[in-house]
Length: 94
Image (cartoon, rainbow, N blue to C red):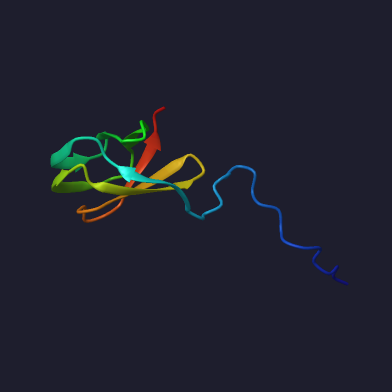
């Protein structure tokens, strides 16, 4: 005898991130970005938010105030920067 499911299963409490990226903001990065972007790099947006790269990446870039699309999943942020080869996984510092 099996009971019929009573709706969607409970989400695990340990992982508040739903696995779904939501749009957080569309803006530009402050200043010119040149050289190597790697874990620990800090970026500030025109809107005043500050992000630190926490995911592994190694990119050589040269962009002047590039456009950035910022997606959020819980406390993790993904910066999709125009001109960069891959998105940056970051944490928000402010």
